[in-house]
Image 1 (cartoon, rainbow, N blue to C red):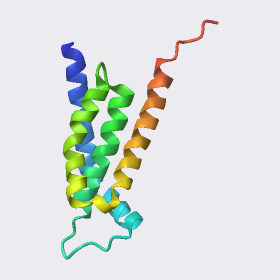
Image 2 (cartoon, rainbow, N blue to C red):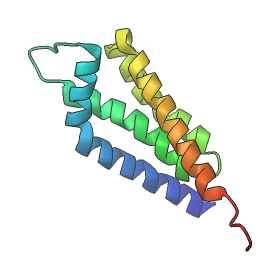
Image 3 (cartoon, rainbow, N blue to C red):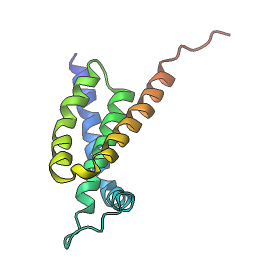
Length: 120
């Protein structure tokens, strides 16, 4: 039980780290897709951090999470959902679609690694 929690915490840490590292690029993509010119301050990396976090949390925990991985996903996505609803509700479709894409890719990775090896 403790190893499952430790593994999930490590996945969350890696998701946060990678989200932070790729947030400027994801923010620029988010700004281009939504045709948002931005404000006087460059907040693209902040929105990129949240969108990358949503994608990576769903991807990593679906693919490699242990027991109750979907509870982890729901609880960890609550702050990101609040941020998106409060600051950018008009473009809520983008993080939802990326979350679904992360789930689909993670589900495929999970199924790929859980296949039994054929006996020859």
